[in-house]
Length: 297
Image (cartoon, rainbow, N blue to C red):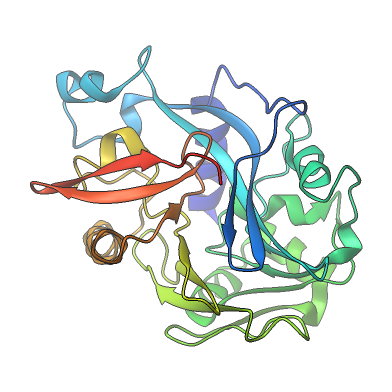
């Protein structure tokens, strides 16, 4: 519980100079077969140098912009042609942020929370599930909320206050039903068009999960949660960990394994703390990687 309180406090004070998405501009998006993935940015800001204690100031400044590494709080919405939705994470739902406004834009101009049938949580830090709550009430009345079993078990056993509020609001609709290396059950009628497979991404937290989305035609995209916090710094220097990573050695292993897969198979990745557009392609570059943001498709 202490770790999560410190995390949320730190995020609130490091992601300063926040700017919010302009609703007049199209949301970044990417087609995957018959579905479309939208970036749902809540807030944008940056991480300060003390987030990455293993990096000296000269190295940090090389990758920083105005003393910070550009970052964001972001979720992703997968829209099916059947007008059903799967949400990946839910940001912190900052009161003056753009989470629900951008969801409304992705939904065609009207926020319809009842159409979200499923929420897949990469991990249970408050800046990834706070938007599921409206006060103490559930924001998405028909949604099943799932994370991995190791993630769920860890935070429930910690008696984490935020996770407790989430459990109280969603009851049995919130569970640790995601199993690594297995496909997640999707809303009726959409299986076959899209599959979503859970990928072990532990290290940042005990059960962090990446999600591999694949269309029937073989198109793929990886939603990678907090595999990286600071794209500009950690792609070229993948051994660097944020202070938030609970098991830094495992975080590095997961980071390299998943980024290698993305690079080798040319799979676009979507990160929850990447600056807009949030989605892009990975290439290997020496001992690190390069990241190229998408041209919207």
